[in-house]
Amino acid sequence: MNEFGKLSVVGTPIGNFSDFSRRGIETLENADYIACEDTRVSAKLLGKFGIKKPLLSYYKPKEHEKSEKITELLCEGKNIALISDAGMPCISDPGYILVKKCYELGINVEVIPGCNAAVSAIAVSGIDAARFVFEGFLPVGKKERTERLEEVKGLSHAIVFYEAPHKLRQTLTDLAEFFGEERHAAVCRELTKIHEETLRGTLKELIGHFNETEPRGEFAIVIEGKAKTDEKLSISDAVKIAREYIEKGEKPNIACKMASDLSGISKRDIYSALLEDKQTAD
Image (cartoon, rainbow, N blue to C red; front, side, top):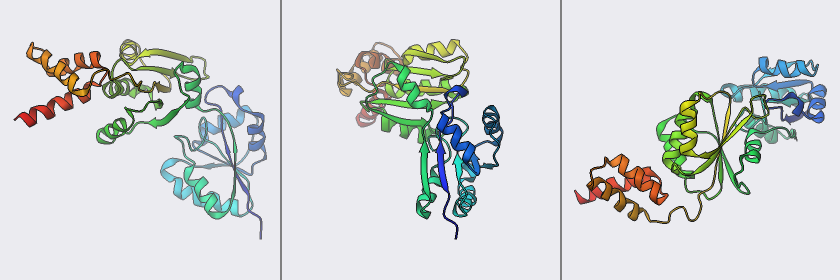
């Protein structure tokens, strides 16, 4: 009976090939197979370093099915390296199911560290991230998206999101609605690539920038944690301010925005409380 092979989880460059570690290259060179997210993308990476190995397609919709095949090979004594298109497998990329199955079968798993966009974004954000949470890509569905943002809006530590260029404007708008327009953030674009750029400012300022500039490339967004002094006024105080603006002729959504700017409480929360008060009064 053959001894089990080993699964190596290998971090790959997120843009600059020079960031690939010597150990990572050697691991791919010594593997019997390389499991990858997109064989076309991985072929470019392997070609850059002159690595020729059989590729096994491993992507999210087929993770369970592909994991069965890969673990069969591992049980036969084959050594397999797992990579994603860029960065660390299992971090907003396929891999978790395969790693979990390997542990269940008693197959050895090792990690070869590499680049990660979330950690890289934190490093250049200029935002205090001694503590942070990684949220990856927000859900697309409105209900799920709202629930996720409700969960994290009050956190006192930094939050990291990923976003695609065609969704960036809407995501920044949603973040401003839940966190408040004056919350500071950093938007990091094309990290480690030729056009790397980090933009810092309030969510309001960042929205203004991307309303005038077409988003291009892949983005990582770092939001500062909620300061203890954010809510100098209570929610009831903010609702009272909004109501005063409405009595002066302002539309409710404008009144809530003005109250939000003064109180530091999100416009969404003020509007919801305003509606609740109205329903109670009715």
